[in-house]
Image 1 (spheres, rainbow, N blue to C red):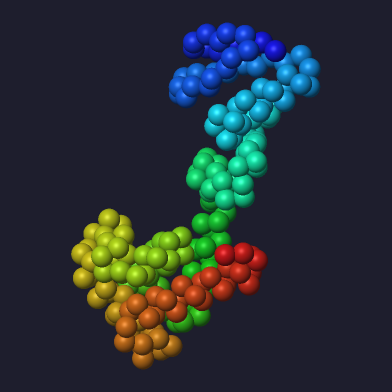
Image 2 (spheres, helix red, strand yellow; image 1 turned 135 degrees about the vertical axis):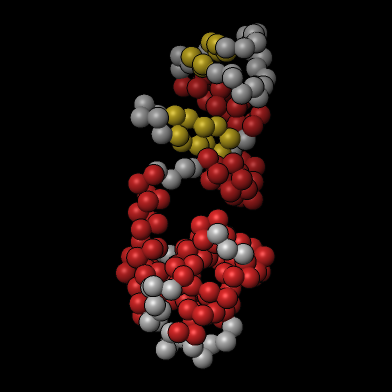
Length: 198
């Protein structure tokens, strides 16, 4: 087996991988044993190997000898963040989400001419992506509407409250948070019913 690196030198029989961002490793193996030795050496040092196929798709080999918890941790911490959705995937998901939100807004007879309803549409989309924003709506959720509508967080809440009051199906709900939770649940149900996943 011969090993060529763009940085540093390697003596025959000894190999210690170093993490350098601009470094490339080329491994030339002439038999199965050399391949296995090389792979084993890399797995022992870093616990994971990323391999690229001819189409540029990445495949990851994780050292399962370190136990199930290690493997799951590596997938969660190192591999999943590297996975990028393609623009067409994210655009499709956004379109599906907005379509479900529009259906829910019509179902609850919210007037689409009101600013509160337009704000609600934007906030429901953000909540669909990050439901935890609902825990502290006044500090984390309402400010998300400020750049688009150029109003303060208190004005966001006032506009939402007015839109809810004008809806014949929601006017008895006095808490904006309760209505947001109801509409978010309805949106998620709509996505699952029509598209099979949330």
